[in-house]
Length: 104
Image 1 (cartoon, rainbow, N blue to C red):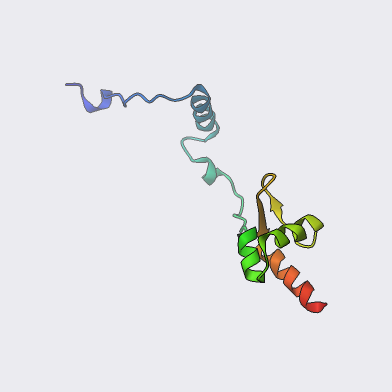
Image 2: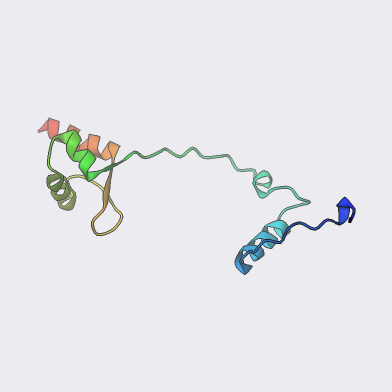
């Protein structure tokens, strides 16, 4: 049996791109210090967005889903469009719409 220092790790099947990226990261680090420790940047807090489906927005406003879609297409409610059929509405945008409607 071979001594522990000569034991080779099991072979992994990695893509050439992944191997290249691993080697580049190792090259960029100083004496094994991880990259995240080398950066002296402050961590920025990201405000989480609460996204609602058109159905959830419709239930909150007690409207039909189709009416919400009409409001989005007319620009009355701002929404994020993921593809041709899928929209998501930020909760704060829905609150703005409600306040705007209450003022009228």
